[in-house]
Length: 119
Image (cartoon, rainbow, N blue to C red; front, side):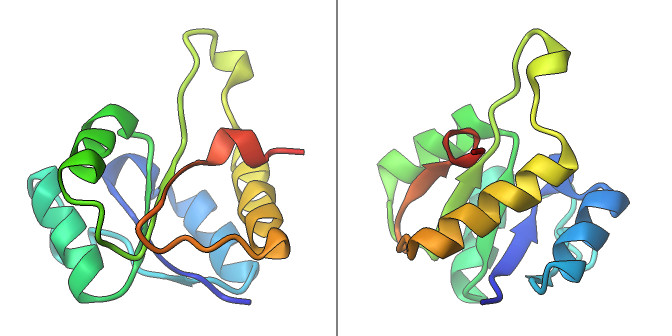
């Protein structure tokens, strides 16, 4: 299955984007959408309007937006650890998304912590 992903500014590393595309996902970065530098609520509005699942490391800000208005195609949140060695690698991010898909998890209106799907 292919997910329509919108990696935000902190999650659009070229290598990660290429890996996600290779895994079959329809990826559009905020740079490609010409919304780089826009406020978080505008990025989430874009995701709503274009039926894209937001991929972000900006978890706290998007969790606030989720609580204020939880209607969107989904948010995949990647939490960062103070100890960088414990952070998710690009490969682990792609695998965690695959695990989500395999489980048949409904992402609509959900704030999903991707770190919990790395197994």
